[in-house]
Image (cartoon, rainbow, N blue to C red; front, side):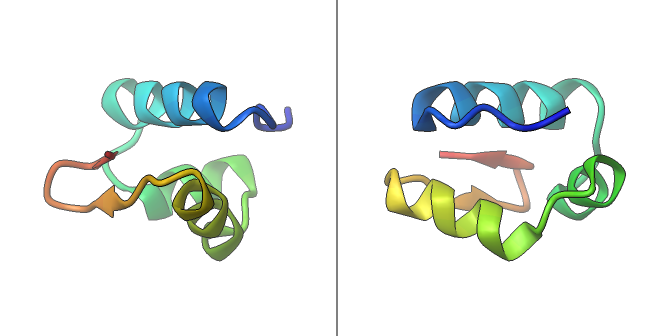
Length: 58
């Protein structure tokens, strides 16, 4: 499964997965075979930053 391309859909999808299924961004990326740096950059380009202590992008 590929991740949504729209930044707002990606934001919603990733945060939902982090909340419901994964304890960290590393776990999500490993399980979904996603390049963590690329995901973080795409989110940063849309104005979002990962907060590890809250396990979500904001």
